[in-house]
Length: 563
Image (cartoon, rainbow, N blue to C red; front, top):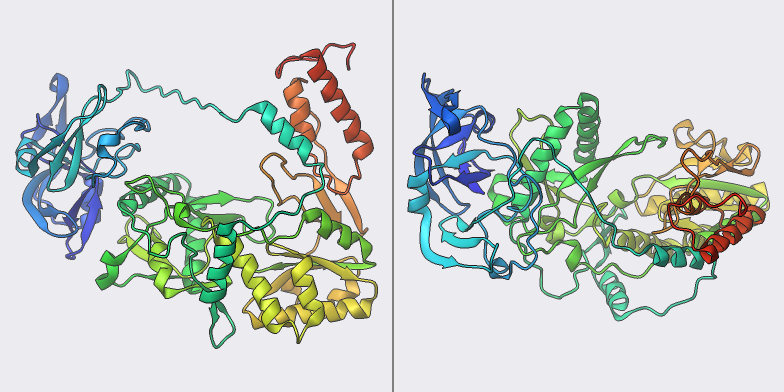
């Protein structure tokens, strides 16, 4: 990665490739548009392998270097494209110990990405320093340069344009099945680990509230010293450009993405990094979108990938304490839910985003964003607890519990509900009388408001309970309880209809061959923590055990006499 000064005096990052056989330097037309530099016209062509010719669109003169200083003033020929993505597929860098501690010129060299600039033999020679390191056989040589360490060696070449991708799941299927059976076991109480105790201590000592009642928390790092990252900016930048290319192919998706980010900015949940602080970023988080067509309010959600590795294969999530699991067991919540005569549910609006991250930690939550590719790329800080950061579930749940402890004496009914009947951002509780349910609802609204939270999507089996709520805070239709997941059990199909006060199951007909794998897969899709379907599922589990005894393979169709 090299830095190039644009027409406005700012440095922008580009991915460059050295070509020791080239007599000239080249830059893509797209990169020139980002730089907004003046183009000198020319009528020349450039010839390559097989005497193939491509037109030169013009010439530019620019200054290139590193984040710290300008190194070269170069003339570059402008062409439409230099080459395809390099490398053509993600490289396997395991065992490359000779470069583990070296500051690489391109920390994300192993990930496919576009080449913006090609630098010829003259710049290559002037860039080298007097150091090189050899790896083992079939590993690249590392050459030190003014840009950082360069890698030179063999790489796999594509023989044609067909790319075949394959993957292998290393999790043993039998182990997964064993864990599936264990889901029927009563959960055991466990003591907190030393790391979980430390995470709790950090929260207690670090959290605070502002004058409006909103909570501010610190990122709970494993070590007392702040972690250092190298190269996360380049990785996040490359992934942003890849995401931007994807959005350019889907205008509707691009518009939704832009609306989400605009809302993020307008709400104060992220803020623009001033120009004089651009060099102070500590970690940069790539982001992408997840579509949720069944969501009643937000079809698209932007997810931030704090597991993205830096140049030393370390991510922000690697440095975080994840804390103890604070959510109550779903079975317990549902059992209590069924006990009440009058029940209600509600959702905490944007719960994570109502909890502020301390100013001291926000430079660990930097991102790139611009609404359209024609705009100047900007850096932003995420100001709140963020989806995708491994400590966020603990920080969010722990903050709600702290709110109950801080203000619960005023609202004792609501305090009890927060401590026992809230799962992440969903409230599911009730009462035996309408009067008491009304008190619980009013106390919950008031208590959550004291912490800067807003309850919405209210629904109940008693319509009178909701009459005094604004229309926009009520939810109509069936409420899906299929948002919860465990590693092996996909919690799909269970719904509650508030009008009939009944739980519903939606089972899709099997649309694939009947094998041991498909039978177990369909069974695992049934979310039935209260055992409504036990008379049926027990028979299926018994049948699966017979298949094991007979030694039926995963993809074999069971014999007719067993069915």
